Structure formats: structure tokens, C-alpha cells
Length: 217
Image (cartoon, rainbow, N blue to C red; front, side, top):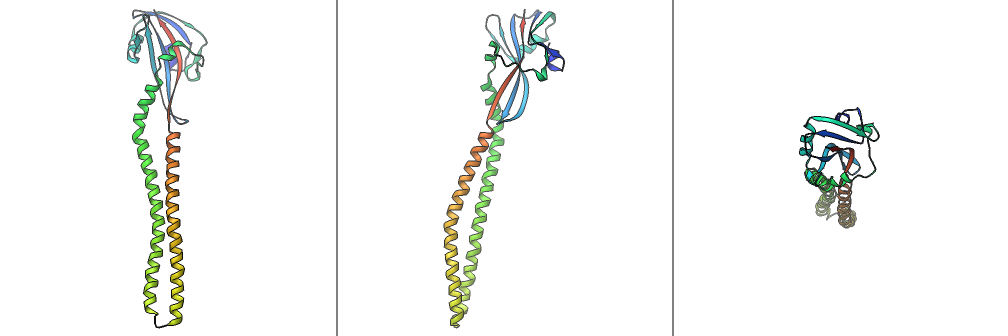
């Protein structure tokens, strides 16, 4: 039966095994880890309980499977493990600690998430710097016009034309500074939305698909 789960051979949902180990019930689950809707990991996990109610760890269940088998029987519908999906509940399902699996995966993903968030913040900083560079260009133009004013003081017509340019540039700079404040605020708002979307999309969830349940006698 275990061979049927590991390979593509068909196996039943339930069965009984007789060997020299303790009396217990063992179930095999496929633990599927998702980041948002994307499956990022899948691995097998045993859960077990003895006849007197003692929990068995994954490694303890594995050791029991290594014990020689005297006889076995199978019950329930047969199917290959890759199409097996047992949706109906079973008492063994409560032994699968999904929260523990989620916490373990969250610990592993935290550095990667932190790195991605830092990348988002850096991109936002680059956008703000680009806005400030545009204002720097206007300030440079203002310096050049100021020098031009000094140079054309003796020419009334050129002086009036240059003063008009200065006035227009001052208005443009004032609007640019006002817009810069709101543009930077919008970048911060967009960054917050992007981070919240990323963290929500990357939320770790775990699904446990039961493969079979065995009674060991």
C-alpha cells in the first residue's frame, strides 16, 4: 500500500496491517504549501495515534512502516496517489497541525519577503529622486536667467523680456514644488498599497490531502 502511494500504482483509502509493532492507526497526508494561490511546496507527512491515545510523530510512524508485515488487507476505492483526493473528513485529520506547517514556512519566507519589500521601497525612492531632479533643472535655469538679468540691465527691452521669463519660471517652479509634495505623497500611498497587496498575495496557507489510513495490529 505504501508502494502504491509512493509510485503510480493504485492503492486503497483504508487498510489493516499485522506486524510486531504497537497497535496504532497511521495516516499519510500530502502537505501542500501555498503562497497566495501559488503552490510552492508539497511533501508527505505521517500522523499516528496508538490504541491508548498517544500521538506518534512522523519519524515514529516511519519506523513502524519499516517493521516486517505478517499480513495486510485493503478497503475502499482504489486509485493512484496522484489523483487521490479524499474530501470526506476522518478523525485522523485533526492530528495534522496546519498552523505549525504555516509558521515554519512563514519563518523561511520572511527574509525573501523582506528583500522584496526593500526592492519596492528602493523603486519608490528612485521615483522621488526623478521628481526632484526635474525641480533641479528648473533651479538651474533660474540661475542662468539671474545671470542674464545682470548682463542686460543696460538694455531696457531685453531686461523686460528676461524679467518676464524669470516670472514665468518662478510660477512654474512654484507649481512644480506644490505638485512635488502631492506626487511624493502619491508615491508613498502607491508603495503602501503595493506592499499590502504583496503581503496578502504571499500569505502562506497549508492544505493536507489525506492519502490513506492504516490500522496496525
